[in-house]
Amino acid sequence: MKSLTNRIGLPPKLMMGYAGLVVFMMGEGLEQGWLSPFLISGGLSIQQSALLFSVYGIAAALAAWFSGVLSEIFGAQRVMTAGVIIFIIGSVFFISVGLPSHNLYVMLPTYALRGFGYPLFAYSFLVWVAYEAPTEKLGSAVGIFWFCYSGGLNVLGALYSSIALPYLGEMMTLWSALIFVVIGATIAIFLNREKVAKKATGERPSLGYLLKGITIAFEKPKIGMGGIVRTINTSAAYGFTVFMPLFFMEIGFTRGEWLQIYACLWSVNIIFNLLFGVISDRLGWRNTVMWFGGMGCATFTVLFYYVPLWSGANFLLTMLIAGCFGACLAAYVPLSAIMPTLAPENKGAAMSILNLGAGLSTFLGPAVVGIFIGSLGTVGVIWVFAGLYVFSAFLMKFVTLPKNHDVVVPASTVE
Image (cartoon, rainbow, N blue to C red; front, side, top):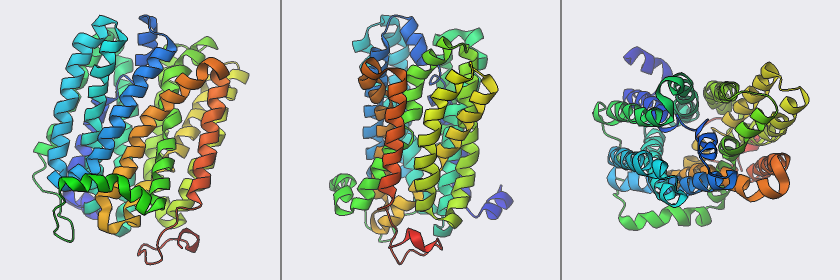
């Protein structure tokens, strides 16, 4: 482990956290690719399913926002522990009470509680990364974070579900998620004895510092714009899980093929999370987000609809497009390096805005589907997401880094 961390250039304490994050997120996200069709087959409409995921996203957004400032007040490990406990409580009530009731108004608060827990764990660890990683390795460090986050959430979770569902069924598969959550938390928190470094000033923020997690977006407008860009980043990916499985099955794919395509999207994504983390340290953080992220995602969002439709549900070709979309999603990774760099004296607050954007992304995607699917249909929703990605590329034109930024990047990325 020591030789590996020396080669990567990151503290050993982060490597333990990364390992725990993978396992935790595997349990958190194993239902993403199939829960919406399962709920709809049980009697919910697609709009009701979208509402459930939207409320889940609001809860996740609030927790994501709290995670940054709470980590500076109470310490990352304590906030991560609280997140695990809340997630477990929410999961138990959602699975044992919410789902069996078939009542949307019972499912909404129980699933929302589950959604409130996981960002406290994951995004508090991201704050940990922002403080512990050397500045010159920050792009790579956040790339590894998103590699582990997406790998557990969207790849290993989906792979486990594809194996477990035929044997365990939907309900027992959901219960088994708690095993991964507990194991991941144990590795990241309880087996990792080292503490997060204090703020450089030695100042301990008070509860009033929570407001900084909002006001900093107005005090430093570039941070506010970065938060909007992060909100758009994975919005389509979360929206896809609500309506694209139905579209794919309508044009000839099976549920198993959809899950494989979805897993391919995120498998490629986790590889490019690492690649774009390293590439962006050389190419420029802002340029990577603008061109590969915004414009790339806009292009492949549209193709993700038209290619399978026009190719007669060609599985391999659709897998290729899904992989390209996943790669472009990863090009937003440098935002996790840009945001704390824009506010070095308030990294926790800056990361709160980033984390809020990540949480709002889980709300925005299903919300777009719920609002537009009835009037615009599937193709209209696709073009709305494409337009959002173009808008994110436009915003990045104004998110420039300070002149005294000490990481060597192309001149076009600084003021």
